Length: 355
Ligand SMILES: *Cc1c(COP(=O)(O)O)cnc(C)c1O
Image 1 (cartoon, rainbow, N blue to C red):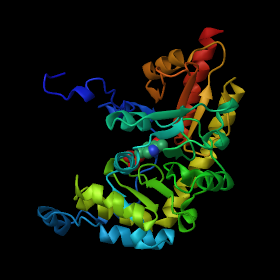
Image 2 (image 1 turned 180 degrees about the vertical axis):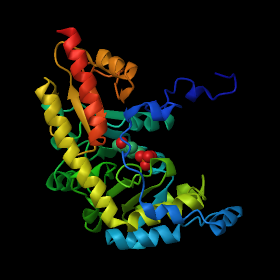
Image 3 (image 1 turned 90 degrees about the horizontal axis):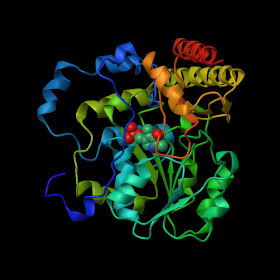
């Protein structure tokens, strides 16, 4: 730490991203919920000489082309859409803009919520999950502040029903509710339609998971016009050109390739079933996930850290959370059939060694 950093930031604990090893091709990478399939083939025609020449120009700060495409695909009005450099940026703007009465979110959820709250000095109201990691929306009733829910939740892979989201919105129309739908496209139910009826809802989405574009950094949010205006004001006060020209084109093409999107999501959902059932057969305890990852409790004979380390030594990466109360759990991204079989093979070897 330098002697120049602000006092209020000295204690800040930053977000720890999942490992991204340099020698990536050596690993079966099931630790950061990326899509195992490459982006749509349509992206290959984008990096033309003209597109490269155009990089001398700033991008459109309003991201008009992408906004128009999202408006069509999701059947919402343009004025209800905000574009972000990944959905993390949008979440960051939302915490900055709407967090003064505190942030209310499940104690076990996306780690970035705590980091944003700490970064902006926002009071945290972390709500413990119920048995089997379920979110009980009654626990949110009567609490003031900004509600943030990943739906489906991470790392649990469980979702709130549409009725539960609606009830959360109706508990207090003067409280903003942010629904983070990073994983909604793998069998979950989106709340985007509810933005037309509820002025206190912001739905945050990403191209990183179901659109195979984690490396391009594109996210978007849908909500009431006034909320979007507020967020745009913050964006234009911080980084007006937040989306680069190439990523903007990539995102548009990915969005238009509906067929490929549905194909990838379909395979991932099938593979999720295969992964879940196979690990259950080996003694793991797993709730049925609606995301592109599963949250697995290891058999009594092995701890989560031990399992994670064994897999890593054998070139399979999964996510282990050392700092939370879940030392017997790992989160495993649903990969290709081949990747899952490699994980299962190593898991069986480890269990054999132990017995
Ligand atoms: C991956 C993820 C995001 C962030 O996605 P980016 O768009 O890549 O910034 C947001 N929320 C949750 C719950 C995620 O898992």
